[in-house]
Length: 225
Image 1 (cartoon, rainbow, N blue to C red):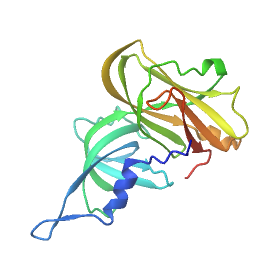
Image 2: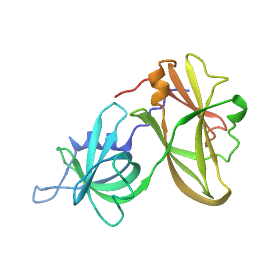
Image 3: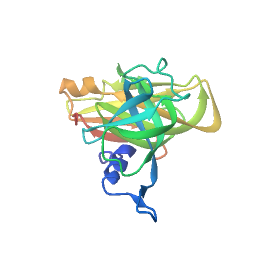
């Protein structure tokens, strides 16, 4: 398998901002774009919320949105990891980039737990991975999966089959009851401890997805930040 090259949607959009705009008949800059990303709550003012976004190349981008009814600062304290969708005006060159939120939800954030090979079983129904990338010591994954009650996620390090070169991680999910209805799940796996240990060259994330019942995404065990 090759290293995952799926990057943050925002990183692509930001690159386009520097060179892209739409011009109307009066030569005024117009045009909008939409995006979605995994972010951290960075700062509040009485009327705005600012998010930080870690990109795959080790940079940080800041987004600022007006506070509205969908966003409760008491529910999302500073540092909260979230998945947001938004609209923005093209042609912005300053920081933060101004956006309007269309949705906001918490991200399931996982630590890595040690486990035996027998515990690392991908014996759940397969799901579709829409996006997967590593940034800021997190492996981030957006998946389309059957809706389930009391769904849980965990990430296990197969200590029996990991060595000085490769850390083998298994993403496990369970639900009490599933329906033939799609839902979106967003998961972040914190791999900072694995990287800081200096023990591994690569991190292999095993999932049961649309491509294989044991598909492997590969990432370098280094931080871009």
